Image 1 (spheres, rainbow, N blue to C red):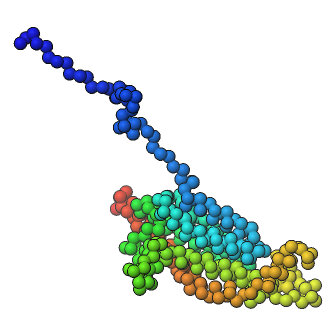
Image 2 (tube, helix red, strand yellow; image 1 turned 60 degrees about the horizontal axis):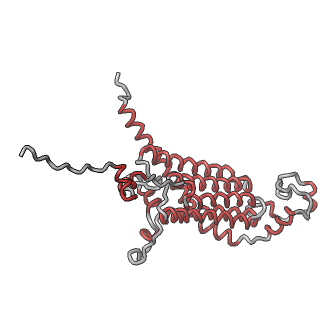
Length: 315
């Protein structure tokens, strides 16, 4: 028995030898060694749509002083694409924080530029337009900062119902959930439709005011017929001598375009302004609510931080 030697066990192949076995690599090691796929956030489809919105907005600003029809068309398409980027984000699973911020910044900037033009077109109401710009920027900035600082870092559009029922309905509910009696049979597939309707009609109201600045003598006295005798003695800036007349030649491109624009009918802009004005006012109320709620949320966070630091110290 002592002369019997035990049989040698076959040695296990090392990882390197397994790779060389039959000229094929081990599938497990190959999967571990393969690099992770890289993505370029800036080239996601929703962000590309956002870039096209910026290009259209800049083009509309270029045509804004003298070409109301072209400007309105470009501006409207830019606003309508605001809904398409959200659809693309959900379709391709490409929702990003960068895209959300890009979308919000584009909305704020385009609306502000239009309101700046309206301030110059209607100087009497310039203070009101400046207040609307300030309210729009302040409410959205405070709301986004409060969401990032106090929330879970998710989208600023995800508002909990306990935080604000009104903002929850504004950001999260579909139109079918509020108005459609057949919502169970024919549900809308587009979420945040209430948000889109409010934003679209809000922009439509300001576009209507923009068109009225070219077509309504009631709002723009410079569109009134000019008296030749009065025009000779009028001071620059008066209704019969608009300050925007920078070309003196009657046959200039500016004069021809203004003459064409003055033939624009003011009926439909008045109708659009009348229909969209209640929604515009409701949008400003929501901005005030959003500003107040975000301020209170940040104040609650400050109180919690002070308590954690033992402040105020008792004497």
